[in-house]
Image 1 (cartoon, rainbow, N blue to C red):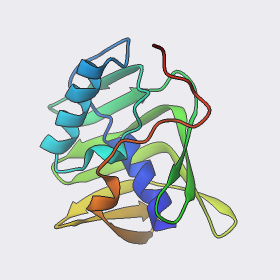
Image 2 (image 1 turned 90 degrees about the vertical axis):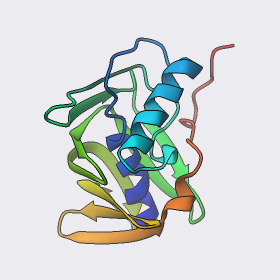
Image 3 (image 1 turned 180 degrees about the vertical axis):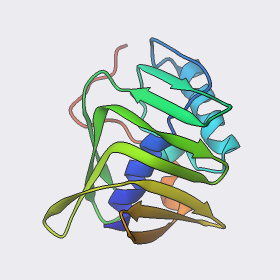
Image 4 (image 1 turned 180 degrees about the horizontal axis):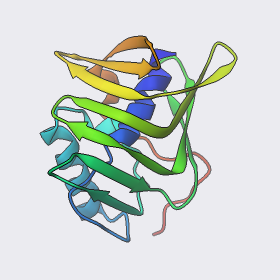
Length: 151
């Protein structure tokens, strides 16, 4: 359950300081750099972002995938889904008001509402419940399942 929450937190990290139409390698590098500048690993963010915005003053962000995105989170193979649009608010080491990321655990879908980075761990918030996972589990960005990358 906590790994699903971690994936959802990844979407929150999509709060990039600029906008982009294509998920090019340079754009993804900028997104990943932005995530790390807020204290999060790049693996919270899938690779198929089409458009994003970040208000550096307020921390409000929006991430557009163009379509919903499904990923399987290792090592426990939790299924996570990202809505077409993910929104939230990011400050150093904390993503709050997260909307659009869900994880399947205990035969139920749970919305990830926040993510905190603490030492070598990520703490996923699902309402009043939290789950902690090692940050190293999110060292690589997942690709959305069922999508083909353009060559």
